[in-house]
Length: 253
Image (tube, rainbow, N blue to C red):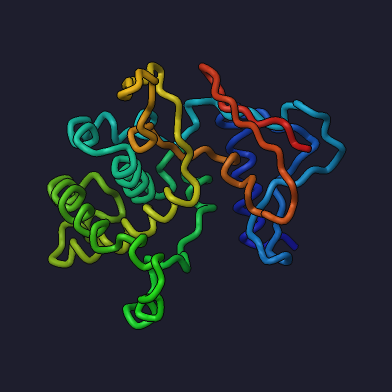
């Protein structure tokens, strides 16, 4: 019997292929790896040749600032945010739309909870006080960014955030925003890709070499591609080349 977890996977693949015109090889499938201590993963059903195309995802399917309808509703606000924070806001918006969102079959797969350090209690974090990792969490700074950059936007435009509208319009808007933003930021950190610009603006360093700031790269969630690393035990040689119309994955060895 197919449980709800598997039903979501089936709906996701059908959405990609039938609605969004993605190409997925019959040699691979999205599998349930919970029995192996993982989540969903892409597994091979047959031998895969070197450089064989396993799937191709249209650029328009990438969940990004460029593709989200929020771009039309709040263009100035999005432009005022850095790539990381703007994608967090887009995820809040699309998630708030529920099944009305174009990306709902994909969003419906993403985890609701994380056990990353950002969710640890103060006593638990105190156990790390002698470790340098404690200073890398940046929770206080992240919260200041969320409340300083995102809170004014979601409060002013609360009606546009679907299911979150009453939360952002209420007296506890800040607490609700931080809770939701923590999840969306965790999703970005865990799953987002740096996307190639149509025209990358590169700066020359002191020695004349061109360099590009990774933090300024547009970021996006690429459905299916982010499932590749579900099983770190296996060896994967993964290539996700970007083309004008598609993001493709090949090279499974």
